[in-house]
Image (cartoon, rainbow over all chains, first blue to last red; front, side, top):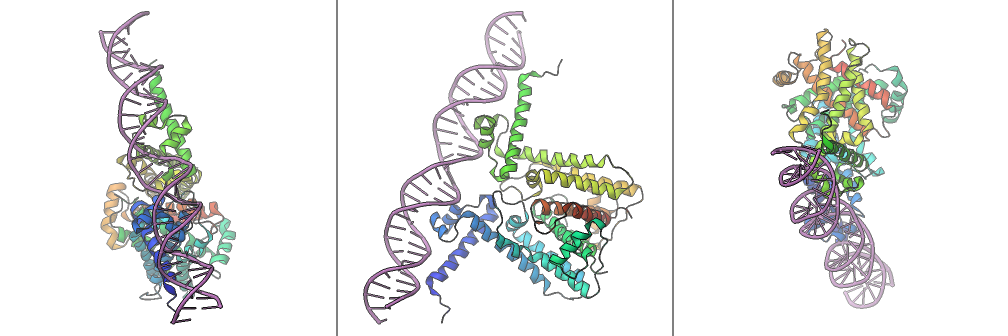
Length: 230
Length: 230
DNA sequence: TGTACATCAGTGAACGCGCGTTCACTGATGTAC
DNA sequence: TGTACATCAGTGAACGCGCGTTCACTGATGTAC
């Protein structure tokens, strides 16, 4: 039974998780700027200095929350990729993926704001965040790749001035894909989050009412813009 | 000479402007959450309580900054509408409009974040902001309307489930326009800000390098998605 | 034109508050022999 | 299996800080007669 690992090791894992959970709760209540170590400790019945056994500073706690957020939205996206009803209907898979991301965002608006909203002032994201941050983009690309392999991806027109950049993006993020499609994918990626951010941040208030249907329509059009399903 | 208006009235206007300018400076340095009345007063050589002669509370100062931000980006947008080289090239006008908004955003990232980023926690936008907030959307619609009047607007396909919503949106925001175009316009509006937000908030860091050309390409495609220029 | 009174910008002290972080400490858990 | 020592989670007090807002006040500007 080598899985016991001692009371200390297990306690450390549990307390670390409890701190992050409470921090997330306060994030949802007050927003990132007002997240306070003292308040987290208070709520947990600890003394504030005790948190320094787990996180060297407030910023490190924030970083952990950011990494977790990227990871949960990333795995939500990847999860939506798997159970596709018809793996050959690339538009439907694209829409399902977009809907999974939107649902996560609506369920966790403050964690969403943490990673896709205004940067937290005075805080600069460390290296640890770049891997998890890429997962959503990778999922979007994978659908386009499947479509290409099935001969059902039509590259959109591409301005000459963007050709070098398109080749660079392709080499770096989606080798083998048509460069024009890669550019369109990057644009669609940001536009997807434009749709979600406007909903989550309240810009659609008193504008769009039928949000589900509007989102479905818009991301379907986005899929066509990328060249899926032609 | 009735334009003298007394030293008091003129001083009030000047001091109010100075407070907002200094607040904007701090916004750029620290972000909205850290904007502090005391720091603004300190920098202006006033005592903090003196600001209460001009703004009843910190939130009211924030509201003033938000309204100003919507107004400046709105007039930047409207300004780009006017000097169109060829008023019949609706795609070019659309692109110019989008570029004007992007340039304002890049030049004033914190004011941009104030209105298009995560909502400031604990702050709820008052009525005064809705008028100024609509100016950008109205400018986008006006281009589409010109295109339609010239017979150069092709409504995109529209899902049946969205038909009622499309009619409502049309009646409210763009009477007389094809409902499918209005839905596409609302989507394009949010997607435009997705492109800008990703650039301003750093998501394109180490991803997109040729930002000008990428933006031009993407908003041109956005124009086509709305049905301009067919 | 001169005077009496009202208005209002700005002062300075104070209120009560919460914050991040450091430090010397206690006592429980883990480890090596 | 038992003992001696090392590790480490958590304590409690303290540091120095900045914040928004209120309040009674002074003195300059504006207004009515």
